[in-house]
Amino acid sequence: MLKISKRLCTAASYVRNGAVVADIGTDHAYLPIYLALENRITRGVASDINEGPISKARENIHKYGLENIIDTCVSNGLDGIEKYEPTDIVICGMGGELIAQIIENSSYVKKQGVRLILQPMTTIRELREYLQSGFSTIDENIVHEDNKLYQIIYVEYDGISREYSDAELELGIKNIENGGELFEKLLCSLISKKQKKLDGMKLGGYDTTEIEKEINEFKMLKRGE
Ligand SMILES: C[S@@+](CC[C@H](N)C(=O)[O-])C[C@H]1O[C@@H](n2cnc3c(N)ncnc32)[C@H](O)[C@@H]1O
Image (cartoon, rainbow, N blue to C red; front, side, top):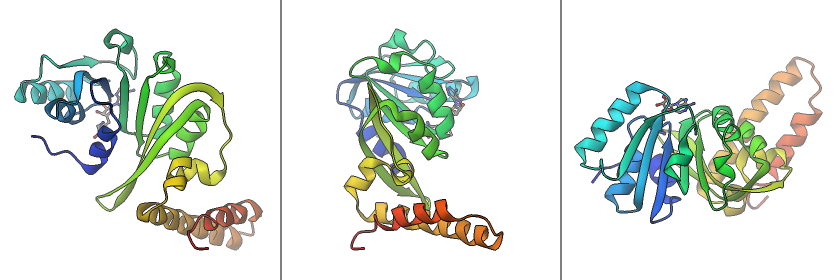
């Protein structure tokens, strides 16, 4: 068996049993290897823009004897992915804006029933801003690992446009709905970041109306307040 990080494990939990999974920006290919060893997927493709990660991925796939289940390919984002007909696409460990760009450049993601499982490392708000136009958030999750909080977002294309509030963009509508200890932790860390920004703005004599409104919106989400 292969032990993978909590972050990747949570992303993997959204992949359907029997799926054809595409792991974009796979690096080591741990995610598809883990899913194949768990007998969770029928086929997989480990894809990366760089040769280096793909040769590492190939070595790992060979080590576990999974060449008959997992293909590899060097590709930019989702270019050429339709050839593998993935049902579930995972994009983890990249910046949110890059993930949005990768999705924007592909029409395959609009295919009915295709699941997108995303784990942005940064610019989460920008990713959600992009997803507002046409992607329905089915579920979200928060993982605490290595002293960091990671957000995992599972969406499907439905073509409907939405408009999220500041809090929904930064925390996620499903995370807000689901609540829980990690949600409270994430909320508190965002409030304290915003509070610091507000203090700096006040010192600089800037107009703080907007940020104060945001902080209040965030504080209203604290359970019991
Ligand atoms: C930090 S690693 C993440 C590895 C793994 N997905 C994880 O979350 O642990 C990011 C990987 O994305 C790849 N990458 C960056 N831009 C890409 C793109 N446009 N298309 C495909 N892969 C990309 C990099 O080469 C690198 O291997």
